Image 1: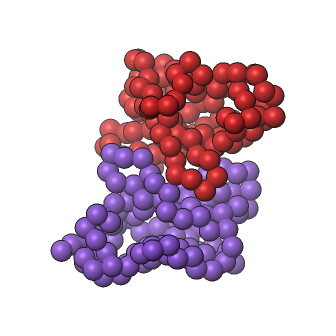
Image 2: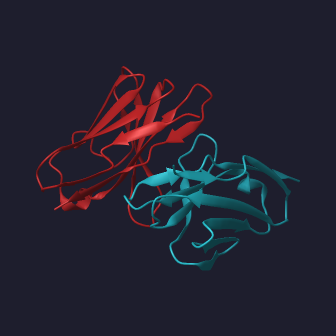
Length: 114
Length: 109
């Protein structure tokens, strides 16, 4: 089956630093990848839709200069949280859409900003 | 390895009750989520269980047995809008989400 990986699985960083999260589709090509954020006991919130080779489309309320998304290849998208603050602490989850239009979710990255 | 098992597809009749099962084998356990996902949309949160027992929320209930590695989502008074995929996901000891493949629920009139 289709597998999506994320790296790192968890990260702790200091306020003001930047963190990069990678999302990879391991055995299929994904022209579209999605980035979600989830706070405890809340729904996944879509942050942005990333299409390979073009600029990401951000959801309303998501700062594109703070959450930089790069989708440089059909198997890799990265999310960089710039100048992270404690309120950015969350669970970040990516998903990749395969040719059959199914979305396959990654295991998530738990970010803690101190 | 870690795995989550849930049926691929289920069919039920409008107004009836359906139970979607999820069994899991993971390294550690820090809770289990159920999500509903309509085609083309992001999953929406339905429930979170970390202790054994049944939690009821309107027409939806979720049950967990940690000793059996088992959970189910119970949907009552089914409506056509309940046609969707239902995802089971377990948080393991590293706080990673282990996702089930989802159960596609088809509601017939």
